[in-house]
Length: 374
Image 1 (cartoon, helix red, strand yellow):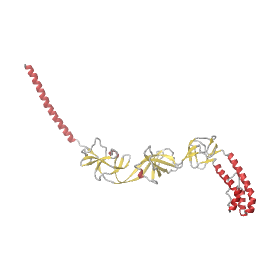
Image 2 (cartoon, one colour):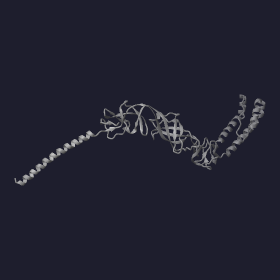
Image 3 (cartoon, one colour):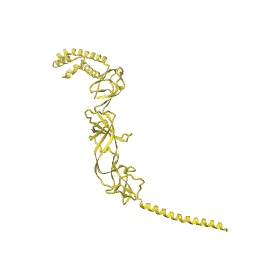
Image 4 (tube, helix red, strand yellow):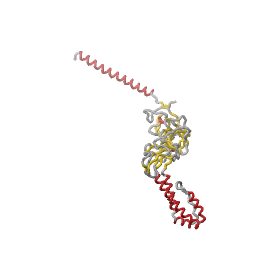
């Protein structure tokens, strides 16, 4: 083997030996650095000891204003629609007792007056017999006869004093004709549709000039002086509310807040929202304006929570789990949530005195060693 080959082989051997030595040194340094890093890293958490006490909370939910009365305006008789005291237009307001519309009734009125005229004749014909056979009742029937005006509502019948008198009046068709007339008087009143409350029309389906039929809807109206707020409440919180509770009402459209009272709580869950509807009667202040359909916020205050503790909502994960610190290590535990707010929750179910973590932790697992941040 020549000298040149020996030099090459020796150089390679030296390089290999040096490489092995350097790798060993670097590996030892890395282990030492990693060991030091592991020793230097500490996980700090915010935690407080569990302590239960009676607390009060508030519940804020937004609802929609609605009228307490919705009525469909429809006639009980057939005829041409005539104007009333108010315009039959969408958005038109009215007062209780005003005539909303009329149904053409001239033919019916004339037929009723004809009936009354025939009854007047029947009554006149029985007066002589009454004077002879029922003298004690004669003056009563004479006064009744004189009060009759075929253009006005009939007066009440005189008192019938005996069965003999009743048989006499029935045989002359006095009773049947009288009650037939009274029935028609009631029917005549149905040709006028009066406002049952203060309100306004929300929809109008027919106008004056059209022919109305019994039971066919002419308009829809709402009551505007009696409004209520319908608020959806989660089923978990409905137990804190009772009928009669006073509620603070907040509106963006008013300078001052108002109040209301819970009038009823539904006993079923809305399948769309999975909530229970609570209805609040609104106390309208003088000169305040509240419109149906607007949104307002209801504040249910003084909700009593017994033996509860409040922590930030971010500290809870998996719906009902929190981290606790025991012997310097994290541990997952289940809690019983009493009430959830926007940013906090009230709970119980943990051992008193144990430390509960009050912040959201990232990449935290059971038995992770931590130190409580003072």
